[in-house]
Figure (cartoon, rainbow, N blue to C red):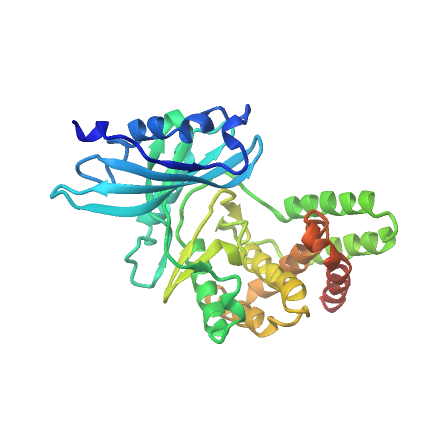
Amino acid sequence: MERSARPLNVHVDDPFGAARDPEMPSLALALDPETVRRKFKRGFPRLSATGFVRPRAIRVTRYKAGRRCLVEYDVGVEEPLGQTRELVLIGKLRASRYGNQGYRQLDAFWKAGFGADSLDGISVPEPVGVIPRFQMWFQRKVPGETVTHLLAGPGGLKLARRIAEAIHKLHRAGVPTERAHTMADELRILRECLDRVTAQRPEPSPRIQAIREACERLADSVPEPRTCGVHRDFYPAQVIADGARLYLIDFDLYCAGDPALDVGNFIGHMTEQSLRELGHGSALAEQERALEERFVELAGEGCRMAIRAYAALTLARHIYLSTQFPERRAFTDAILGWCERRLRSA
């Protein structure tokens, strides 16, 4: 029997029913073990000189109907001498896209000094390839855990400084992008979010209006930035720590923008996490200061005002986000109050 004809015993876990999504019909193929076997065979020359990459298990781990899906594949990679390496691939699919752009972008970071063996310990996941039939591109799953809860631990201050170094490295990488994000875009998104909150909860509308006006005044005070490539969705879940090595992940929103946006967004998420998980908005204040100070050391004092403005705008956006998850709705008023406090100090 040929190696490629071995019987398949591949477990498929699709808790969302993603394979039935009419807006992303290629998902059904990407979740079919026999089709995956055929497409993976010789589909990833970057992984295997022999070309044999065999699926062991398939899991849908994230899914937004009609828009995007993330699938993990446990695979065995056959080596020329007969050994088999076991690893996990992550496949990413977005509706109406074929994956080439995402793969090329990650590959550009990989080649710009973010490889797995980078001397500074700052990396991105290894890009693996594209399967056009699935409209999906693939990367290796990296080891470690997100820094979401590590920041509150005993090494939190050192970790915060390392995160500042990691995002500064990204800003200096020079990976090109045709997309841009400005302060006007940030305000537009915030207005839309606050309008939805007002529609859902008319009773606090005067406070929401005051926050909107304060955010607009604060945004007007931010100097015009020198733009570069920015992550634009930078928060603790986008950084994975494996010992001393940090991995930056998920560049779907990468664009040209103000580098202070990434740091401010990260700090705003830390404040929200402090309120929701640690009982007080200042529970991670030392880590927030360590992140800001290290980034200012690297990028210059001129970015400090913009960092604090973007942090306030991010926290204001979380007023809306808290209403979208049942487990977070109890914290909406606390976030609103902390946002007022931060805007007063700003």
